[in-house]
Image 1 (spheres, rainbow, N blue to C red):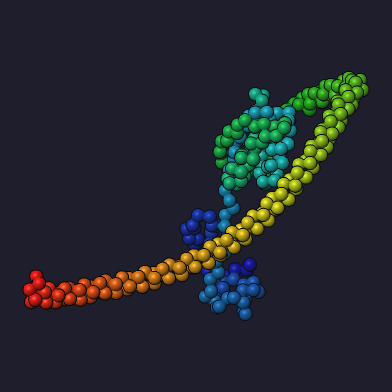
Image 2 (cartoon, rainbow, N blue to C red):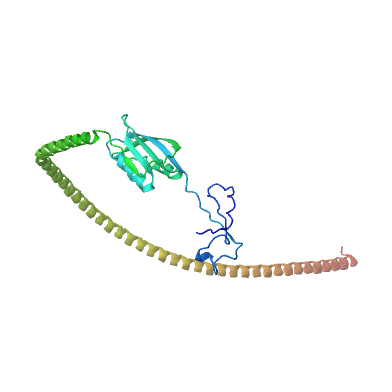
Length: 301
């Protein structure tokens, strides 16, 4: 931008953490880009524009020592893949004591995840411990590389030749015994087939027994159905008997009512008989008195 001959910008102010300097420019002291010119977002010559740039995340260095079964098992290649995936720079190398050393630089949070990811365990690699030391980053690395000791490639080629020879020996001796082992395997398979035939025969015998059991269960179910029918008939007859008993009880109630009426009649008759006896006694008494009086008057008694 052409700042022209206007006054210099004011001195920079103290910044909060994580930001670069604030830059203040007056629109009267320099030419604005088209998007800030007339018709843009600027409102006049007194408008002040501020440009803020956040700082990049802080970089740190981790020096990591990894122990366990980590050498000659492809562990360094695994470390390089992890570092490239996470955007970390540095190097990895073997130590004479059997450990692996890793020097890594990157964002602090990413380095924490990287250290956790170094704890690899599979059929070849088994990490026992990971020791981490933190330092300030130097910025000396552009990528992540593997350190190879002098003579390491030759020793690995010699080891590969030994392993190849062992593989050839095992293959030769293995094929010589393969026919016998195949015969034994076939014998075992024949035995297994015989056992399977016996098992199938036993299962068939069980099937026939189960069929007989099912037939007997069907017969039992038919018998139960017949018994239920008989029980239904018995219940019907019991209902009829109960109905007849109810009729008998009604008739007995009627007989009892009539007996009560007869007793009432008997009570009335007894009362009447008692009244007659009383009347007759009174009449006899009066007559006896009259007779006695008449006899006394005549001097008979």
